[in-house]
Image 1 (cartoon, rainbow, N blue to C red):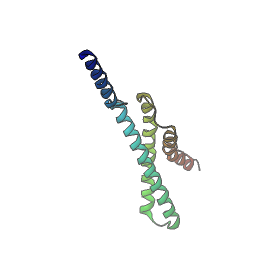
Image 2 (image 1 turned 135 degrees about the vertical axis):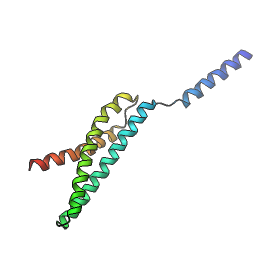
Image 3 (image 1 turned 90 degrees about the vertical axis):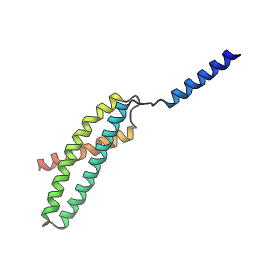
Image 4 (image 1 turned 30 degrees about the vertical axis):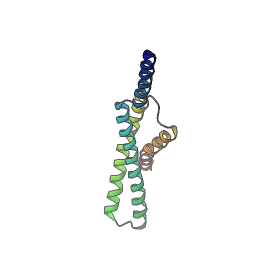
Length: 123
């Protein structure tokens, strides 16, 4: 009987240890966090650029706001490229891929300023 109890306790301890083990590695978590932060930063730059664009539309003589718009667009493009470069890394190192809806959202947010700059340059 003592052996049975020991085996049961050992199995129970193994199950608890497996439940406490993280599902993802530290590397994959770090890559995911970095990618998510770049997506949030690009989104903030996009929103700021849109707001400054509306403001300069109402007041075209505001030179500082126009400079802020250009700075935000540059930051959005640069960080958007970084975000798009991190996406394949995240998809490769994670055991379970991020939610598809967030991945699509992230690609759209990262690509939007790049498309806007290319379209503006084509005019």
